[in-house]
Length: 463
Image 1 (cartoon, rainbow, N blue to C red):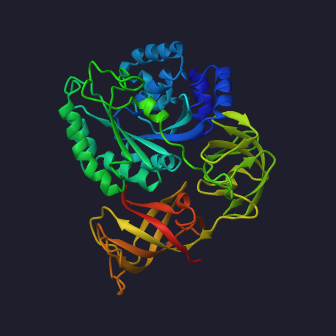
Image 2 (cartoon, rainbow, N blue to C red):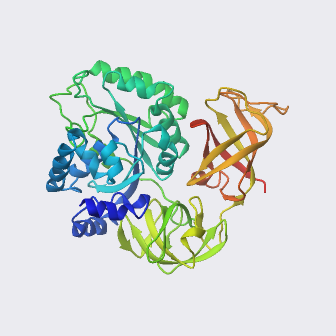
């Protein structure tokens, strides 16, 4: 099993999950069925050590994606390394470095099924150093599960200014995640013991911040108290331990989520998240729009390279056609691995995406110590692309209450202000789209000195 995990590791980010599903035949059966099921991408986010990988691994066990024997093997191996409580996370953290340190570094990939839906799990890293990797995972997700540790002191650490809870919540909103499920984990901890008051305290502290990020508490946010290690409230609600909770378990809630309308008839757009060589060039990413078929000729932007689709895989099973919302691997002809970079886009030949070096955008500065003037540089993350951009000009400020634009050009912008700015990409052309035409490819985050300072949307491509 370990060897299988390491082999697939060589295949980059997309190779993490498949090592898990040992019975290959089972995966085949699962996937043919899934063609009729709604497909949703789910990202687990939250502060380091909140229990994201453990919950992901436990869900895979409860839905039959990892069998009992494999799990027992993980448990034995974890005990040998004095890591008893980590064994469930090994279903997602397949490389040795991740297992030894108990930290997710790459975005793990795996999948599971409920009665009505097929889910791809994207297990994002929680550690501060790996936020850029986490943004890559969030940019492919439809739903985010924010894992919070209820253990005394751990929630506070994750939610304080330096903790990752705030940043992760804001990043998934920017990435276009519409629905946030908050799992208050470790409710079985001796410092908590399924205390309703602790659950409500976390809820009361988190909700105002999530509202500020743009989530509507009534429709977009759901809180579920759980124990990831024991599995309480993941598949079935434990009414004995938790009589005060009247909602659904996590799996039944996920199964009842409404379908997401996909752009099946739209032009093909697939941002490339990663690529590697394996008897040809293989690219990985999520299809945002359009349907890709085997044998089809596409154009890769921004280098306008014509490529042919040789093979297609969806959740690691080969197929002839892939649809919007699916996380896929595609083997391409007529392009070398070194000529492809994350952030490139596969497009329909007759409908290419926009490329730009200069563009106008609306930006909200969320957290920045000093003022921002023309000439300021930061790293922009837009879909799967990360590039340095410079503020060329400040065009106007936008009043938060009235939405009116200022008539005078501002000399600077500061924290909590909204402005329209002209940005220039340092390295040349990148692929993007105006937000109103294509939200998934028109929203971005700005990061500086290891923290997210602002979020924005592309208004107009200038040049």
